[in-house]
Length: 227
Image (cartoon, rainbow, N blue to C red; front, side, top):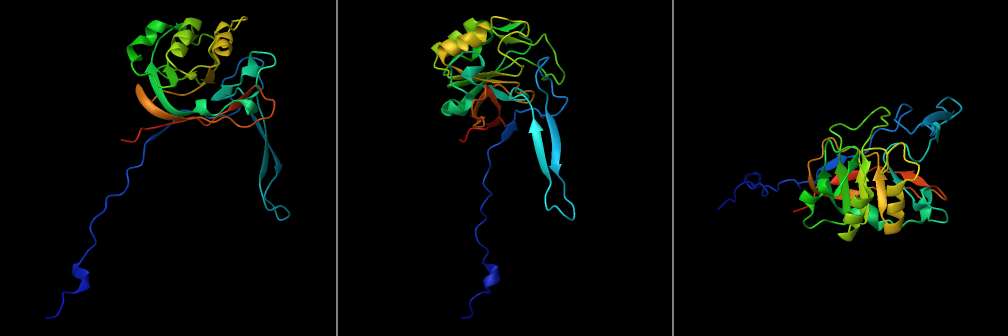
C-alpha cells in the first residue's frame, strides 16, 4: 500500500495569539505643548547631522520635566522630600481604574468617584475632559483635597488626571499637592484619556531616573487586562 502524499497532511490550525490592546495616554511633547506660564518649553536642537564627515544625527533637548505626561516627585512640593530618581516605582506599574468625571469643574470631588468605588485598585486615573486641551487653559479641573483623602482611605497609591495639575492654576497654597505629600501618594498629570472607556486596565508609566529632579516625563500607557 502506498501512503498518501505528505502534502495531504496539514498541521492543525493554530490561531495567532491575541495581544492585549494598548492605549497611549501621553500627549506629544512639542514646542507648542501647553505649559504653565513661565515654565520651560520643549526645545530640540541638533548637535550633529549626517554628512560625509559625520555618521549620525545627534539631538539635544531642553524642557521642564512637567511638559507633557509627567510624574511629580515629592520634592516638587516639599523641602527635603525625595527627588524623582529616589521614588519607589511600584506605584507606576500595575492594576488601574479609569473613572469618568467628564465636565467636573472646578474640582473632582468624592461625589464624582463614588460610582466606581467597588474594588478600587491601587491606581486611579480620572478623565474630566471630553478632549484634553492642546493649548494652555487656566480653567482646567483639579482634585479636591477631600477626594484624595477618600481615595487613599481605599488603598489607592497613585492618582492621575487629564489636566496639568491636581491644584487649580491660580492656587498659591497647593492644598492638593500638600495632601499628596501627607498621604504619600504618587501622581501623574497631563494625561490624555480621550479614547479610554471607564474601567480597569494595567498602567505602565515609569518616570526617568533624573538625578535631583522635581518631576519626570513618562510615556504613559494603559494595557487591557488579560482574561
